[in-house]
Amino acid sequence: MFLAGLLSAIAGVALFHTALARTVRANPSTEIPFSRNPGTAPAGSIAMRAVGAGLIVLAAALLSTTAWFWPFIVILAGPVAALVVILIHNNRVARGRLAGNR
Image 1 (spheres, rainbow, N blue to C red):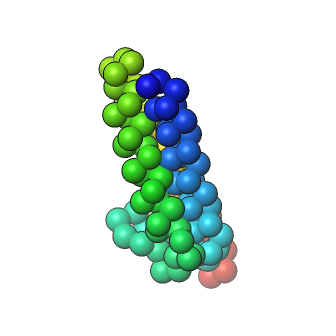
Image 2 (spheres, helix red, strand yellow; image 1 turned 90 degrees about the vertical axis):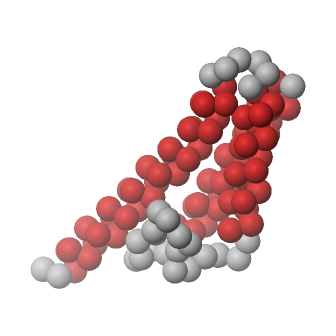
């Protein structure tokens, strides 16, 4: 169960972050909102995020049989990294707008 959970976590986080990278590239000068879909969503990115999230939840369920802390690590690691990427992108877009207004 541990190996299946670990593989599911890796696949889920990889899909989730691949979709995020495609979305960031598709919106180079637009901020990406946290609570809804971005203005430009590449084909398949929403489905990739959904499948990735499902695999992450499956991994948390499978890893919870091993130790109590694994689900927290799996569920927090992927989304926290995604939030950091979105914050960096949005900050870069905002700085670009400010530099363009000078």
